[in-house]
Image (tube, rainbow, N blue to C red):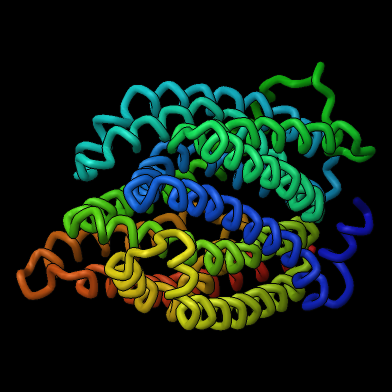
Amino acid sequence: MRRHQSSMLRGPILPSVIAYAIPIILTSVLQVAFNMADMAIVGQRHGGTSVGAVGATSSLIHLIINVFIGFTVGAGICVAHGVGGRKDREVSRTVHTAIPLAVVCGLAVTVIGIALSEDLLRVMGTPEDILPLSVEYIRIYFLGITFTLIYNFCAAILRAVGDTKSPLLYLGISGALNVGLNYVFVFWMDMNVEGVAWATVISQVVSAVLVMVTLMRRTDSCKLYLKKLRFHKAELAKTVRLGLPAGLQSLAFSISNVLIQSSINSFGTEFVSGSSAAGNLENIVYFSMNAFQQAATNFVGQNVGAGQYDRVRKISRVCLGCVFVVGATLGAVVYLFGEPLLALFIPGEPQAIAKGMERLVWLTLPYFLCGMMDVTTGMLRGMGSVLAPTILTVSGVCVFRVVWILTVFAQPGMHTPDGLFVSYPISWGMTLVAQLIAYRILFRKQAARNAVTA
């Protein structure tokens, strides 16, 4: 761990950020690739209807789990601050609080997801021809959600101390297993979306076990002892305090995405299939950019804990520059090769592919704005401010999109895919500007306070 810590607290910043981010990017690309394989395999075997059925569940899944995923952000920030300030006892207590929290949250999500999924999918206007398949898929998916949360909590802890390679390795193992099981269940056993769902659940179990074993084998303050698992009041309170705003922000995003998915559903099954396939391509860009948000959160968090504000300023600039380059480049590549990539999911359906391209033009080309917005969120969270980015993002992205759907998109001339998707880049740009202003104000206050107490 000391080697990873020194790369955050000392030495050249750009090489350290890139070295930290590359395994996360590869992890994310692998994750997206495996998810794409899910849809491609079921699409090749059962057609666009099954692709649409799986894709129609994504916004609802995120709606239900994102509040709890936010707590992983809180756990990661707690560990990063503790490592930077050399508070080993606090780090250890955070680790042993995080796992029980993941289990409790996972069980809650399972119950909520299974009980409410069908009604919520109906409220979203999921087309009747794919609704039964969507319900079947999502209910099986939620059976394994506890293991998903355990993996995410443990991965957040490892990344907070600089270990981004272990999550990559374990995701690669579980993802390869997922793809293999997809072939077994869908092609050999002739299962439909339920086969894809069970393959996902099994792979989630494997990834959770592997990442917990890694924590158990560590020799530092992050070492996990199963007999010490319990809720520590102070660390639980801090994790919730830092993580709840992030979770509520994600929840607000999910609510707006549910409304957007409902709007997409209004264009029919063909558009749902094309949009679902396009969403998988967008995820490659998004999760690659998200690596720099995680870098910003943890690099800034450790250096704030160490009181190194000159380095915090440099880290922020490096992360913003990196996410711009990655977002702009990957966004352009995905759009340029969009048609053949979409055809992997929905072969022989040119109309659905055309619908997918309508989405890509508005979301992938300006996607770097979203990446820069997220990095600024990470910078603010790393400094310990979780409320400000939540308010700004919810207002600038979620509320804006909901108002857009209810007003502009509702107009007859604007009730089109273009009229819906143009709201994305507008909201990203506005929120980015607001968050940069907030970061500048917060940085000056904290740096001045640190100079006085130093």
